[in-house]
Image (tube, rainbow, N blue to C red):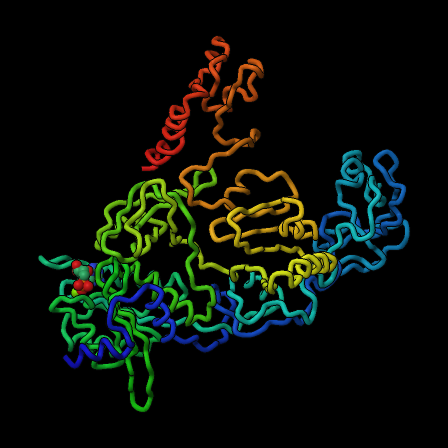
Length: 616
Ligand code: AMP
Ligand code: MG
């Protein structure tokens, strides 16, 4: 009984908590680790712990961007293919050596890409713009070269310091080192970098039924796979796994194993956290630290233990965060993704912790019966610019093969009872890197005042003033009116547009309208994201040039000619007067203008239901 109180109170949790609350708790218990200096090649994915300034110019000297002839641009002033200008070739310089001569008027130096620009030269003419090839093929020597082109000063010259200037802050503290940053460090001549060190993550599988991968199975046994999945996940996210092996379902066995893991920065166990008789992880941890035993409102992966183990070794005292994942292979992976992965990234000093999500059309029904957040294993594919997600098979929490077939987790909210084929769902992309960069929102300020206080006029004046300062401005007006008028002369939104606002939005209790300046005739794919994904059908009037499925309306008094060719159309709607041979030649469904229901049926069958059944 006392232990139960311990679990429920130490981390202040008694009932089922949300995924966000659980993550917040986990993150509040893990700290950014200390920096270490190490060879740059070992730093991939680590976070820089110092600002790096360049002590050199890169490139260190003006040099050639092409193989060609270095000369004075002025010498080529009248050069053309029909009337070459000839320069005396006074030498040659290759990358890695220094030119020994100065280019004087009327002379040139043959130069290779990357070779320092000789003194006196201010441009490089590439071989193709000289008569070098014809000269060689006609057996002439290269003591002279014909220039076939008038070149400007600076052509094909890479300026000293144009990439990185000496003294420049090249890489800021906090930068995640990717191959390109590692290359930058190398180009500045750094063989090491100061980075936040990688966390050591101890991994312990628990269960009397578990046996090592290299052992034959006896009746009742299974191979321990979680250790491997978790270790691979730890490595994938930049941590160093330390495998503790298999702990048995006894307090003594687990205590001993956990003791071995306490030099680590974090301990991850799997199994032993549900309500079975042998689920002793929580008992062991309650003895050794502050342990929260939670039920998280998610599926799979409801039971999770989390806490800190107080490690006392001699005089050293340390707290080691512990995450007790459920034993079922898929549950342990999905809970790892949601909680252990961000914790590891935080320890590494990473700021972007969220997996990127996309919105995809789900291709079959998913039901969510018990009010928990459902993570469904899906394979996401992109077709015609649209993401689709299909469930990868049986969703039992022991079925690792459906996880292996998945590249994403469709997230169904706890408040939803599921999604129907054709619905748009959010999908966490398992194999994509964490979301980088902060979400961009525009700075915002609201001008308020009583009516007649002159706030509209002030907004107009501010728009004009900020336009003068070169700003791109959006204006948002709140209206209490039921009828929104946009682009109506005299109305506030019109005034804002007149004053120069690049976008004007008006929002009322029930409606929203937006007028946004466009610098070109927008394509439908540029407009659709503004409309939003929540509609069952988008009916478009016009957009004849788009590749959208189209239905053409034909009217007798406008003649027999149609606007579109047959291959562009899905059907023709006519008032009944379409010339029969022509209709036949189009080989398309001909619908009656008067029969709206039939037209709707056609649309429904062809574009709404068809898409869903194709999908399932
Ligand atoms: P538990 O959470 O300990 O009740 O385990 C739940 C299920 O996951 C049981 O069927 C276990 O056999 C299975 N399981 C636990 N640990 C592992 C592991 N390391 N590898 C594979 N399966 C496991
Ligand atoms: Mg077990």
